[in-house]
Amino acid sequence: MQPLWSPDGPDLVVHGDNLRVIGTLPDESFRLIYIDPPFNTGRTQSRQALVTTRSADGTRIGFGGNTYETVKGALYSYDDRFADYWEFLEPRLLEAWRLLDDRGTLYLHLDFREVHYAKVALDALFGRDSFLNEIIWAYDYGARATKKWPSKHDTILVYVKNPKNYYFNNEEVDREPYMAPGLVTPEKAARGKLPTDVWWHTIVSPTGKEKTGYATQKPEGILRRIIQASSQPGDWVLDFFAGSGTTGAVAQALKRRVMLVEQNPAAIEIVTKRLTNETVFANMSV
Image 1 (cartoon, rainbow, N blue to C red):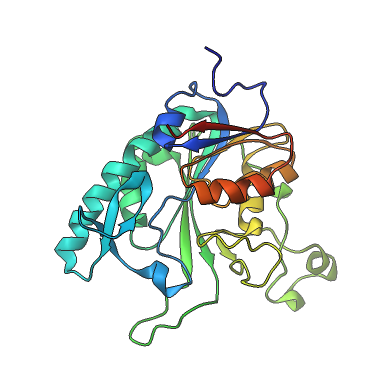
Image 2: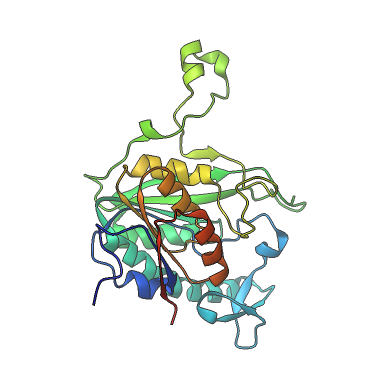
């Protein structure tokens, strides 16, 4: 039987359960893995900020066909849901560690509700020495809270496979304007500064050309910075929560090779439109 993916093969999009799909891939195959798992409530639409819990009687269908209901519970109810969430996510993070090559990097994109648990889990899976950065993606758009400080950032945890041998080149990333250009030389102001671990970047504009209609779509500028810094042209990039396919679109534009995995048929339709004609599509949903 021919393997699903090969290092010499074409860019690949697979429709199917991501744990099943990535379990078929060989060790140390990817230089960069970016994942933005479900239930990331750092979203702009109010309906996407609802808290959900698994329920046999729920009316909402989520990952793997499981049903969910909207709840407003006490903290202990949140803890119960947290246990279910990490039963789902942790084995996928372990697979990410296995699939990274010796110079590889994982970027895990979460919101404030889960990121502190993720940090503990990744310290255990990768080792604390493999922690590279906590990136704050800050934006200023969407609903305004009136009883607390509005939540206007996501967190991206960055871990490397080998802390003594990972690939990173921030000279390749797009520079950004100085906030106080008068404090630096005109030459520096014209060139711009290298980004820090706080990234100010707008969300995908509801009326912009990037917009696909997918609710959790991430901006191309965020993925471009990640891919530029932690991979080189020709390297393999993996995103097994592909969503709208931004990782794939940016990776192809930057001459990287890419594999995406997604279970949602509506997302697969969007991905199909964003990637090049040379991309191969496979179905492991049955």
